[in-house]
Image 1 (cartoon, rainbow, N blue to C red):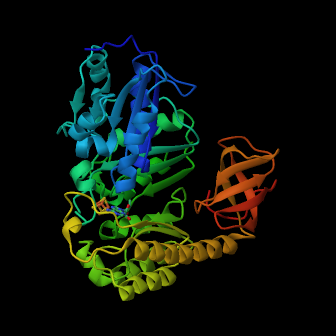
Image 2: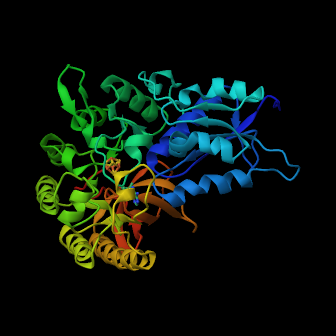
Image 3: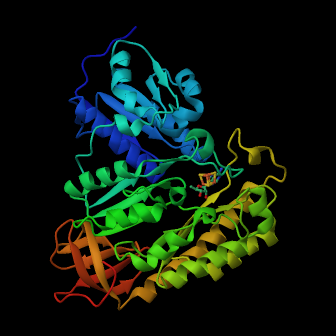
Length: 447
Ligand code: 5AD
Ligand code: SF4
């Protein structure tokens, strides 16, 4: 059995969704607490590949990444495969990739330090348990935060959309306790976060008791975080239309720190396809929901996810999706070609769509979304708002940050990272805006 010297450095590479980014940060903190330091170069003694299983392409990436880690002398770092590929096909990863020493599922990574110890002795260790006791209580406190931070409040999914692996890889819906979330948010703000994005596969399904013991939904967490004086902005993602309840909608009109942005995937505009996807809502329900959200917050920026080429999707059904896009008015959206995932009900449905048809539909859909996005950005020109500065731009005196509507903005002016700078938006492009810092305080606008 090979044994490894005491590891001193680590690297965590996350793929896929924002929840993986959050898990990657927490794994890094665990390794910090073991006395390891983040590797500055490419090479590290421990490498964690935090994987995504949502589509086939994402899933296959892990094997090419592993291959790349073999050094010229044939040696390799201590490699851990984490995330949803680990959960879904951990045994297969072990069999297919002998370089992998550890496989750890998304609900078990708090045990990474103990696994590392065993792996160092030469064992190959697999832990894909979904323990009833959550990992969160076992993780070290947050110490690092940039101006924008992620906070996972909810995990898992009980919706079982027929195309999706998440209910199998992330398990049942689970809401973290209210007090734990407020405490973590306080730590993040103490470490410098000005904006917190609350994360969950079904974030708006969060349920719990607030500090007074009242049953609340996500709006209760948002209200509590809004009371932290140094926190300027709150966001949340991803929401399911079926869990979008009145108090959360109302919060968009009542809580200034809650940003005017909503990621609300619909996936398709065809009722037949929505039914086959087991989404639990029709296109009309979604449109009515948008009316209610816009009544509470007229300027809200809408974002979504779309799947093209779901089994049996006809040209007419695809046209219904395009029509919904026009009617809904998206500020941005993500779109994907349907990818059959082993073990999901849709994988065995008849009516496979040919790859060239999927390609062509995806292009048409993305063009439509691009038009909407440009229109939304153009509509913002002339507005004054605060931009949260995240990093330096490429040009001298230029900074990059986000508007309340989550647009990327290149700002010219005096600023520092973490500042909320009053800006006049001056130019619009497909994926970003330009703006100039203004000295005077901005016209009433969201922070
Ligand atoms: N094929 C294509 N896209 C998928 N998504 C989820 N599962 C699949 C799949 N099997 C998309 C959905 C979801 C987003 C995160 O990924 O649009 O909202
Ligand atoms: Fe997957 Fe549907 Fe759950 Fe979203 S709601 S994670 S798409 S099963």
